[in-house]
Length: 308
Image 1 (cartoon, rainbow, N blue to C red):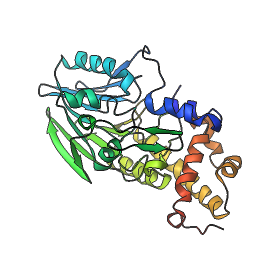
Image 2 (cartoon, rainbow, N blue to C red):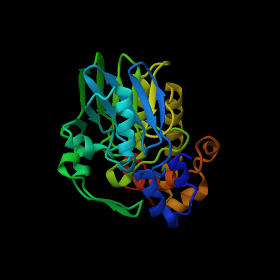
Image 3 (cartoon, one colour):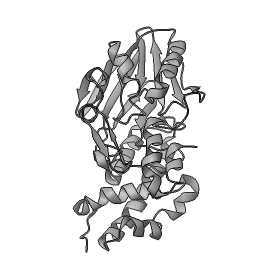
Image 4 (cartoon, rainbow, N blue to C red):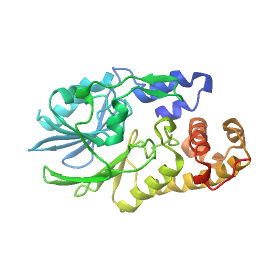
């Protein structure tokens, strides 16, 4: 089961326990990893926390995200099989969450270049009080933090591929980035996009629905009909599926803006079911609505409403 879907199916009283599974990786250490070939040089490893995208070349190996720490050894063993034991030259972190950054320590100690947005480095270098999960994430040691950061966009050539990357501001977090493999026509987008469950914004690190709407539109504009967009968890998405997420978010934002103007609480919004017609396809909306309420209640002016 998709972890965000699992989370949203339990009572709010257990949010701290279930959210631990979402961020750290709910699967046991013996869960089989699944390797999916995207192109001759690109593969996707799933089942170890967050998705891990692997690019292999004679110059070395490049990863986008590293899965959760409990699965890191098995993930990196699969990477070695795919690459012919070539060293991991570069690792991108799409954001700070620990189911994406679980291989940072091992690879950082080995001298891997770790690229991320500056905000991701800052979050990994401090304790994060994740109120919606009822837990505190400890800072990572210096060698596990990104050693190359940027603010807006960047680009590099590696292994015969043109790789572009850029910030998607205040979407899932305030440090989300896309990593675009131009020749392969693959975009890795982390948890900004969602496969089989409602997207969840981490309001504690400045994610919110407005930023997610902007980010999904950015991804749609970059893609074409043949582009594969890799989410933080789950199967790759098409351009049309990203547009569906964007359209759903626009509808829900408009409805919740009207509810916010009436002074409705998160529970009252849940009872009003602003995403009801999407539940059959997207699952239980509980965590999505609760975190969205937290984000929009902090931004009434950006929502264009006056709270009564």
